[in-house]
Length: 282
Ligand SMILES: [Zn+2]
Image 1 (cartoon, rainbow, N blue to C red):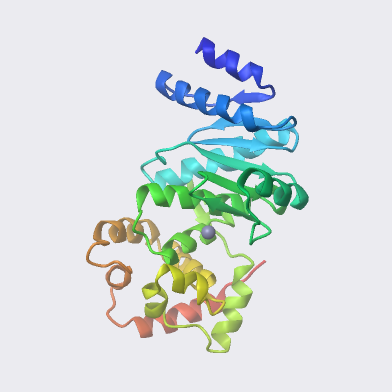
Image 2 (image 1 turned 45 degrees about the vertical axis):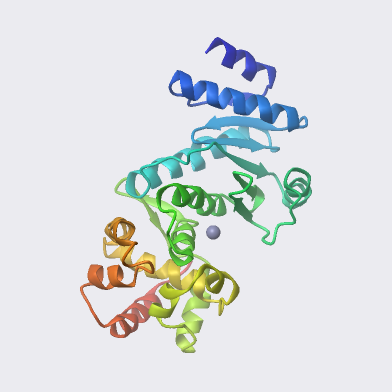
């Protein structure tokens, strides 16, 4: 423990907020020592297992995100969905504005982000965020490394559906819930114009179909399908049943039907679309 404190003090301002056992301490201390070699001045580093949060905003602001958003989301997501922590320490990079995000994504990861908000890079074991856009995307991205650790065969529709669900999140009776958000209007428009593909085709999408052949509704349809399950109290059960059955039901289609108690998914889709039409945001 003494070594750790020395290592931490050497890299002020670093706050070790939540370290557990000795082995864990050593692992994080080694990781921080390595980080120290690559970090320029002006970055705060906060240990928030299983993450290390690194940011170039004020130390107080970085600590605020670590202790509120990251700690809260990790605890709530683990309570309902993810028993396992990711095997490796994941760095959460919180860049303070768009300019810093673009400059530092290039500097640290040789990357040009395709989104203004933030992304998860499994290869770099990093969440890379423009935190000026808010904490919502941060919670979305936190879902991805946990999904990878707990449900590696999860299809993209579920991975992005759950991430998107919690990008606008709150607490209800102690559990994390997704709220309606900016993705609703586009989905309602697409439903109205009968442009939403069938749920069975959404669930059957491969990774590249989900991302590359997106008719513009994939994220929103996946999100609001999970939102429907959440509002019916079926989401955690769907998730755990799907994960247990993924060998024989890789898309989740059969699990969805059994959780909904129906064999007619087209009829369910009509009910779901009618439900989505009643939702409001803001
Ligand atoms: Zn995502």
